Image 1 (cartoon, rainbow, N blue to C red):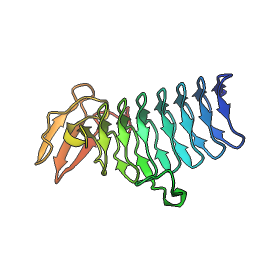
Image 2 (cartoon, rainbow, N blue to C red):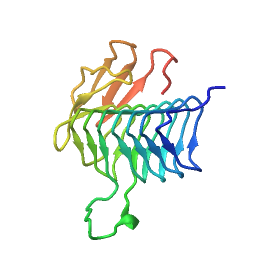
Image 3 (spheres, rainbow, N blue to C red):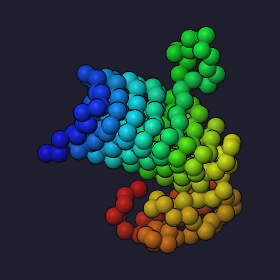
Length: 200
């Protein structure tokens, strides 16, 4: 049985659920209502709020705050100092905790260093958000997003390779690493695995 590693400087409030083999590093704070899966890595100076769900095998790099109403499915990567929000129009002088918007990041997505995810959006499975990008709307599965505000410039395989497929139209390509086949139809990219190794 793999126990949870918790650095002596980390604070894990009573009631927090953390799965087997997870690691909580220096100066990280996990609130009591958080639910964190197995094999998760929480880097240095990470904050995890009460109403947060983090799936198995997620990696949260240094200086990331995962605020209330954020859900990360399995295998999400959060790059250093990327940002989540949970209020659309914050004011210091006006209490808006009853207006938190839900944010969902689906399985296998990558959120690059210093990216910002504005609350209320869904980031699709295996989407790839470039460093410094600002996401203000929903992101399709496998989409490659860059810029401020972010725009889609391509598609990424589940393995993390850019695919030779236009943003729009009808096309298909194989991941150069895994051989998985990707088909684009009506703005939706689907994957047919070459093997059963990675799952869907």
